[in-house]
Length: 428
Image (cartoon, rainbow, N blue to C red; front, side, top):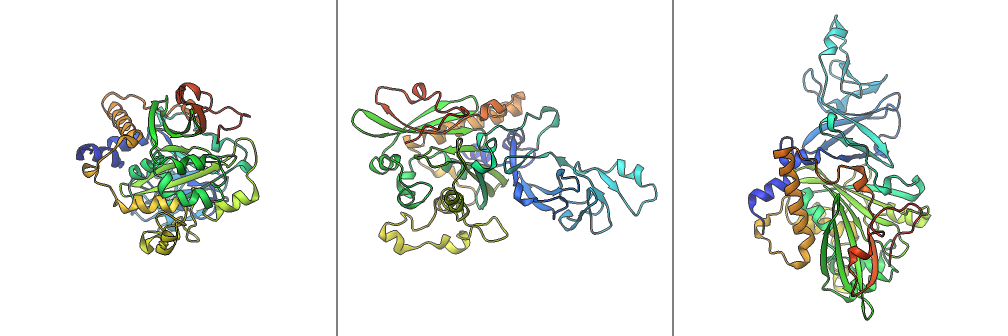
């Protein structure tokens, strides 16, 4: 179990909180690039770390992420006009550029002098891969842009989606490093999902329901190793990297693309699950990309025009008790992403960890909480830069390997868990 004050520290990410300040040290996904598809397109509401913001793309293609509300009377700039290199408030015509600087106040005679003293909070917004990233911390300590492999490969080799999840970021993230639930919750997906099925590793997952966990520190976070029995004299290892604070990768299966997530707080009771698939050596096939668009693998089928899943909290995730009885889906919920979301959201907006009873299979979760707490307090009390800020820490891969029982996964897989351009992933 976890003391309430530690649970509060880890789950609260608003301005001025230790965990909120920790998140603000990193570049984070703010939107998908598809949300601002062209110059002068409609602005988009963005809520991150409990801050209400507005994103827009100006006439020169520059991206802006600024305070949602006009400095004049507090009107939402979502209603504004995106035109002529700025976002103009529809109430009285005040206009802002992508830096948040007010550039026009039509009602004032001495326009330029007045504008100089009006500036909204603004954060950078840069496109890397198919994601728009922001850094919400001190610009004087802004790190170099992220270098995660999925965002570095050519566009035809990668796909990213997102979905709204109605729970705190931490319980969603903890599901991302929990390899033991795969054997149970996702057993149907291992057999039927086009982005998972057919891999030899699925057999090991299904045969051994009692994985042994070994957790190792990395420069940017952790490597969580889950060991299952394989052929005589060998173990099947699934190695999940976590890069602080919220990046995880799913160990690969066969030649399927590699999956992964970012778990980004909207506020303390909601988060964005950014889910990516990529292959480091080849383009995604048409059938793979279509499966992702259809909500297979780690992706979801969303309500058109939104990023809310079709199967959601309000409709009990379209749970099918008959499919559950037939063994098609272990929980009766269809789709790996929604299976995870349904159970994580079932805990409530913020799970009460004072009541939990953890077991050895939760060692990765325990270690991650300890590392997050230590980093947040070291940043608050001593100004120590946390792990995962340095782009060098981003160059990691997940791996799935079969090793002799005498070998340590970390010693044997040092090369397997780092990005090596032109080298295949280590997969079973």
